Every structure is written in C-alpha cells, then in structure tokens.
Length: 345
Figure 1 (tube, rainbow, N blue to C red):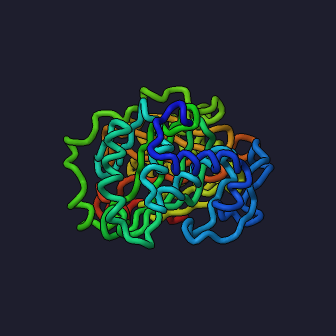
Figure 2 (figure 1 turned 180 degrees about the vertical axis):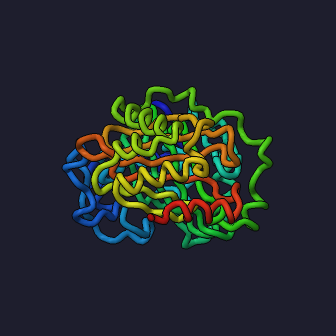
Figure 3 (figure 1 turned 90 degrees about the horizontal axis):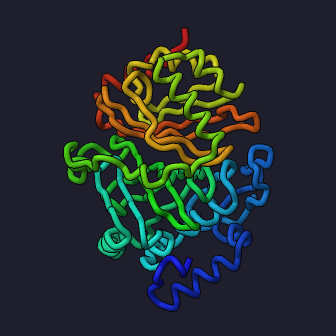
C-alpha cells in the first residue's frame, strides 16, 4: 500500500500497518457479523469472520456471506476511517495514480485522487460528531465488489442516504467507485439543491478503465439475465433464479419470492423497469462467483442508469437480486404502476 500512496504523516502509516498486521482478527474488532450470517456453503472463502461484539461506529450487522474475507476486511476498515472523519486514513484506501469517484444520482465526478482528497477535506470537518458511513452488505472480492451502505443524515445534506457502490480495486486499492441511490428516499426538495442538470452528468463512468475485473461466472450470469430482461422474456429470466430466490426493486419498494413469481413480474413490468426492455445495456460487471452484480444503462426511458446487486448460490443460480436506481426520475404514477404489476392473479 505504501508503494502506491505517498502517506501523509507517520501516525497514519503506523495505523494502516497495524490494520494490515491484524489480518483476520481485525474483522472481529470492526465487523458486526453475528453468527449465522456467513454461509460457508455459498462462499468459496471460508476465512470470513462470523461474529463480533457491537461496534457503535458501524451501527449494524454487515452481511459478508457473498464476499471474500479480504474485501470485507478492506471495505469495513475503509468505512471505519471515513466514519471517524479521518481524512488521511480514508484517502489511503484509494490508488493515488488513478482514482475516480462518481455519484450517479447527483452527477458529481471526482476524476482524480487529489480532487477526492479536496472533496473530503471540504466536507468532513462539517460532519456531525455522531455521523457515520457504514456498510450493510458486501458482495464480491478484491478485484471488484458491490457494497450496500448507509450515510447518516448530515454527511451530504439533511437526509440519510442508502446507497449501492460499484467498487473496483487494483493492488488492493480503490481505483473506481460509483455510488447509486434513490433520490426520493433522500427527499425531492433536498435533491434539487444538489443534483446537476442531466446534460452536465459525466458522459461515461470510466468503466473502460476497469474491464475484466469480475469473474467469468458472474459475467455469464449477468449476460444471460440482461439478455432475458432486454427481450422481456420472463420465463428465461425465471430459469436463472434459485427456488427461494428474492427479487427486490428498491425505489418501488417491491419484494417478490420464487422464480415463477419473479419471472411473471419481470415480463409484466418489462416496459416500466429501467433495466428491462430493448434500450438497456450492461455498463460494467462486478464481483466473483458468489456475489457482485452489474451497472446498467438505458437509452429509451427516463432512468438512464442504475445498479443490480446479485447473490449466487453454489449452483450459480441467483438467490437474491437487488435493483437500485433514482426513483426521482419517474412520476408517482410510474411507481404505482410498477407496484400494480406485482399483484398476482
């Protein structure tokens, strides 16, 4: 890590060296993963910590059942430093030679390590003392991952944020992070004051700089799922799901269980879901053989982008799908129509 980053201050260097030396035991200090959350049957890395005592900074249990212990440890440490308002410690997790941080809902792009450093240097001193940014669920490995996390109120505006970050790594350091979240959950009035006009969003999300950072298994599952969704083929999509799979669409507050019901819904709602239909495409695939997902693009509808988190079972079937996109871009009626399609007849 020190070979890639010029560390600022010996205290930060000592702290990160201590973190690395702790290795797996660090999880017992920083993760709050109760026994039973991690399933060795669905994870190729049995070294994931399974329990620890309550941590007031992290706020909640962290589901790492579909992540390797290495990426879980790395991201949990990252969020601890961020929550502690430790600027130097936070920035030590990003590659200094090449880093990109994009907020996909606001349109903010920080295209270099120094821009991100200046951003945190501006905001961190104003964060409330009891604020926190903490992970809830981590999917993937140290090549790439999807991390679901929460920013408490006061970090970036008066409302809390519940986000999914697409995170790519190189040599253990973050080279690209793109955060997706629902502007409606944040509050439409608060969103307007921060969001850039659509024509000022980045033209691309630097996905071309991180090609090949996911496993062949995840890429194959994503290719088949995205193809079925593009063709509105609910039956083909249903075949990809495990018997007790859960489908979640966060902005519409929909949760459906079982491949038959999921397939029926995906066919019925294909003209409404932003990640279904002929105008959709995969932007970037993340994760390993058991967890990850993909960022999507859509050219025909009102929602041009979002992310889909995927958990896979040992047979490489989807056991949980979580879609997150900006619900502020569609009308109340559109969200009600999505919910109506979930009514089974």
